[in-house]
Length: 596
Image 1: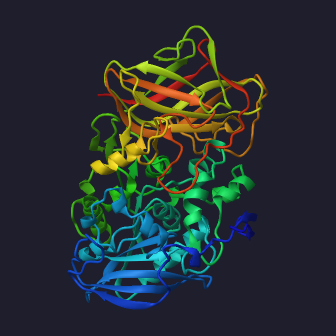
Image 2 (image 1 turned 90 degrees about the horizontal axis):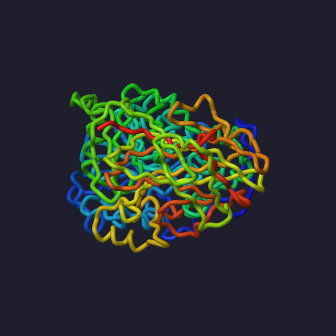
Image 3 (image 1 turned 180 degrees about the horizontal axis):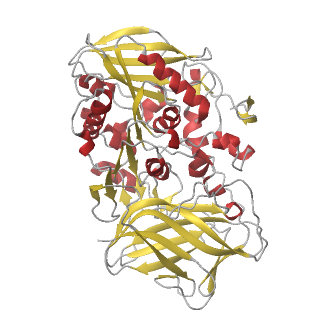
């Protein structure tokens, strides 16, 4: 990509906006731009092994949607062939609404989804129009600004994107076939955009269904813990986006703006302004979305909100027809006004993972975090490499070479009876860099069996796909997203200052607005947040917290099974790091324990 910049007046900032990959270079190519209408007959089949369409469907391809500034976006509209008006489910996607790289190479069948549960009309990470039209809903796929044939530059999240989505919703609501009731649905980035759009409160947006989506790009992805990390965005996303204009680059802007500023604030979703009914889908296993989705549920202003936490992989979960039927009941209630007793649905349906064992799925809860959680501290003891129920009387320390990718330290506790950990996790440490003015710290929490074997949860259920995941093991590590061992965290120590507005007693949040460097040999206390989880540690298993100067734990740093070289992060680490425990040093792991 040829780099260029763009001045964003609303932010008063110059922002990196390189040329997006040329649309003509996409392989396989996107469908040509051609505004026309086609009729798909009931019973027709549109992909090998797919189900036959349950009704006649009219497809209005490449419909122009005019934005407030004159920019044209293009949408494909799938609607049942009926004289009655129907509500619409709108999907705003950067991944190409039809054909192209994502719809071909990330097809859900590759991850174990039976072809017979799909119509073949579905776009990547989106609800399937072949099924939804049969339920008397229209589905509208909108190519995001700057992608495929849509005009304008592509903003990555933020207010400008929210306004594009707002305008698209209001344009669709005017169509003669539409009741004027619009919902949004979709997974990952198709969920992330919903936060910003819904916060602007388009009059015809009646409900949202975000299927796993981060809410704070800086803190949860691009600069998580204050450590710039553009690898995923650059090598797994941006290099497979195509259009004819320019695209906002979080990876490049993380280098330009490593501290929190107006650019990053604009990409933190104002979820507190969302007031419409919301159907949240979350998981613990996503290395991108696990924190954002459950925290959005916690903070959103909506009074009518429900969250389902699953135990599979997000692309598999959204393609499951049982989950589509559940979502239909929600949409029927709030888009069609059907009295179907949806409100009796538990506010939270929880999955508790048991790596190496059997998960508990669908447990009804009334809130998140769980009101009955007991925040319990397990104290680090460097003298024994143990987690203790009480602080060690004597001070001790333990060190590792922060530049050695094989070096890390572990603290463990043998669990005598079953323990459930559900909620947010904090690691407090007193740390020292012997010869540097900053430290990049990484941690992972996981469990081992009595023999010391690290226990994995694999997110795919099909036997052949589980074997496929196992085949990707490198140095005993499996890829994240497709497997899970427990939550992780990271922190650049110079970013240790808290954001008092966002922090809660169980979830410290860093401000990232300034650097507070340390002196070599200075011992400082830091709070490092691990992402929330719900997992069981069984009697006889060992709970381990591992700490190092690089990504640690039983999972590979490669987040998803996509092309591209994923290397260890560039850090500020130099020389020896030391952790101080016991005596006058408060170093502990605070866990949310759920009583039996």
